[in-house]
Amino acid sequence: MITISKRIIGLLLLVFFQARAQSPADRPNILWIVSEDNNTSLIGCYGNPYATTPNIDQFAKESILYKNAFSTAPVCAPSRNTLITGMYPPSLGTEHMRSTYRVPTFVKFFPKYLREAGYYTTNNSKKDYNTTDQLDAWDESSDSATYKKRKTGQPFFAVFNLFVSHESGLHQPLPSLRHDPEKAPIPPYHPRTAEFKHDWAQYYDKVETMDQQFGKLLNELTEAGLAENTIVFYYADNGGVLGRSKRFMYESGLHVPLVVHLPKKYAHLAKAKAGSQTDQLVTFLDFAPTILSLVGIQVPDYMQGQAFLGTQQKPERQYAYGFRGRMDEAIDLSRSVRDKKYRYIRNYLPHKIYGQHLDYLWKAPSIRSWEAEYKAGRLNEIQSRFWQPKPTEELYDVAADPDNIHNLATDPRYAKELLRLRQANEQWLRQSTDVGFIPEAILSKIASQTPLYDYAKQGKYNTTRIIETATLASSRNSADAGEIIRRLADTDPVVRYWAATGCTVLKPASAKASLQKLLSDPEAAVRIAAAEALYQLGEKDEPINVLKHALTDASRPVRLQALSALQTFGKDASSVTDVAKEIITKNPATNPINDFYDVRAAQTLLESINR
Image (cartoon, rainbow, N blue to C red; front, side):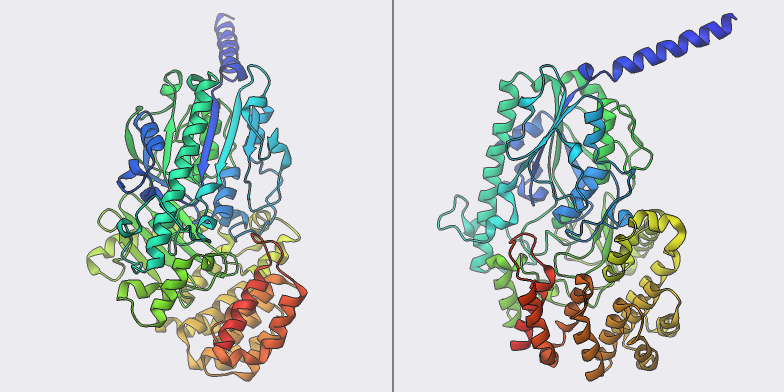
């Protein structure tokens, strides 16, 4: 009886202390200050003397600076999907830019958990979560949302998004600048055109203004008497912002600043000390679990990240994973693995150049000048790569080569590291059940019926065979041609799509007969991929007719895939001119941020035909 009584008393005490630890009155406030589109190289405390960020620099001296923090995607909406769900978008089917496919019902936007626990949750004001919104995650989400509206004594989780550093700030050149364009540090992959010098200097001006806004938010917190009870995160939502940074799988696109301040009363919730720098790897996948860990809420099992602060910290992760899917109207598919020394990139559509035309990116004068210099033949080899087909694999020593211009993937001295990171990528693709290998023309149909995560968990997605086929298709190994051709007859349309794509990459003449059969495949994505491959094998009329018909399909992803293929045909695509014009006429682009991507692609196609 005594033993039983002791156990009961022990359990009661445990419940008592847990209840106390989870009491809203004892929990810290959390403030997120999020800048847009800037990587670590644009912030002074990360080692750039040209940058003017005195407020963030001072904040870092009193906080923990993370040297190895990474967004999962090099663009806002998919990376914000990671932040709000604590899950990996290629697992959810939410990797494509502004696709808004549903997530499973059990996936909550994590502020819901805080709100249910008594927190006042606010977002000011960008969301862009790349899925169906969950309005009940916030007490208020608006341009006027603030923690100042909460009840007396109520803990808060507040997000402030600083839009001033967004890439749109480069669309119009400013007549006068605070930063000298002639002194702007320009990476070696950019030519030193007048436009690049001006855009770089102008963006440093924008970051300086962002820093001032950051400082104002900190001052408001102090003036409200809340600084000693509030844990503050500063980070950027993805890298950027000039060409080859935002949207691309390099350090410039994925390596983000992260500085976290824990007041003295909460210092025990971090292993690192205030004023220190840590090389711990963290990724946006870890942010939601970390916030829950900091405030004493149990991290849900479905979350794929791991807490790096608080009472539920996990051992440091070995790798940070990243992905690139469709970027606006530009179709692509790449994956990346980063450890503390190397970045590995696997390109699954290597025949598509880095510099696919993307209307929003082309609004900056610098990218247009870069393209003009390439066409004029005035670029060196490093600067020209952006306009050429991609290597299948890329490997960079990020310490020795922060600009990622020396690809070590073919250097035998790095064969061991290449193999290790290649295997890490392949393991993660399978572990995370990466559904991003389903072409969007098929994926969108599935998503209209069921969340992609649920679809894959129901055993309807042959992860191993599909990823294996995509790997064969993109490896550029002629020895794989026979197996790729055999898979053109596979029962799975996603496998057939990748086999046809492999024929575009390898161009095996012996595939013609099999590809001809696929021009009448039940799946439009397969027909389009087969038509593109046949065109590369010298066929014209029939493939172009198939693509022309696809432009009239009711599905926007189908139209977009066909337009993407046709953009590489030049004047050979002139017979589709009238149909492309109809896409523009029927779907006028009215929203400058989220207009119809097929309209943009149709405009680009017409320009390529008329050159």
